[in-house]
Amino acid sequence: MGNLDSRVTRVAAIYLVVVVLVVIAAQLGVFPGSLDRPVEGNGAFAHPYRLAMVGIVLLLAVGLGALTAWTGDVLGGWHLGLAALIVGGMVTGTILAFAPSILYPGDQYPVTFSWVMAGAPVGFASWLACTVALRAARPVAA
Image (cartoon, rainbow, N blue to C red; front, side, top):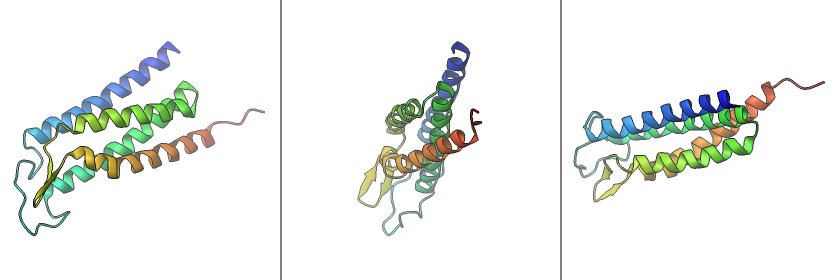
């Protein structure tokens, strides 16, 4: 089991590095519009930073769901994958709070808000689909 645990640890570390790199890139202004002020009349998805963050949140959610389903499969229990999803989701949301806020005219929201509203449901759906697929792909014992 030591070998399996090291694979899970490596995958988790890579995922966390990706999330941290996203935040660093946003702080440095790599994403278009990440340091802009909102413009009146600008639609919800008209700003490039909003679009970039929604896309990144959805990609991270799908990735986290798939990785935690795989983790549950490797460790031998869907409940372990679900626990990894919950912990990973909380850690991801916490890290994303350090990215520049998503600005709307008169309002600003942390990227964590997008993570909770869009990422959490997508991450759970991804985890569920991958968990079911992994269980279905497992050979049936005779």
